[in-house]
Image (cartoon, rainbow, N blue to C red; front, side, top):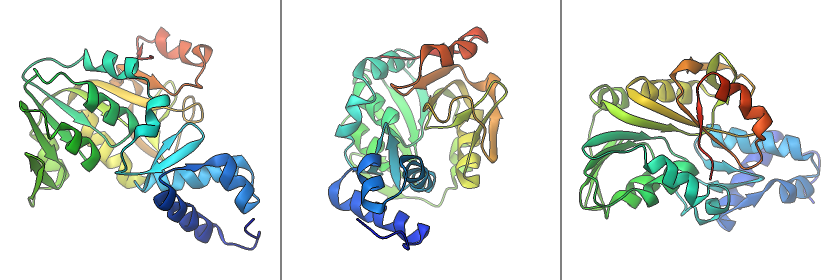
Length: 249
């Protein structure tokens, strides 16, 4: 057990190191190791998630860019397949880094000719063997599995895309707004959703029904919610009443 005098920033760094070494970290294990509550460790995980260093799953986290095999238990193939039905031929889609986007990438038909814009190398690499898919990585272009660096800013790429679907990672949602704890993530999420006809957002039990520091956009821009497995139907009901579709496996 780590002693209580470890500063929070040191604890968060150690959690990240363990995640990179082991490929996965669990809230319960880290709470025991650092002698802290599960809710406190969960907030530490959220700090790492908001910096783009880990993907936050139900009770655990995995380093960004790792093959998210572990995510399959949390993001059911049926959920990914339901999202894939929203994508048509000759369309563009925007996928923010996250377990949902990676699962979706694994279930998009190879018969489709589409353009994909993403900030996730793992998602981009998943699409690299799709013969009819053109993949733009924010900061570069991926073709035949090779990342070709460019100097284009993320906003320049996103402003040129007219997307049929945007899939966002975990956000805070209440009945008026979409928000996030990180200012840079808020700006990117806002740019991503502004150009899309349909917007699907991932929510956890913690993030649904809550607000955070930085505004992403109004709730009426959201067309689909992708809930984590522990989000109750009762909690989702108010969002269904305002016309939002719930995507659940």
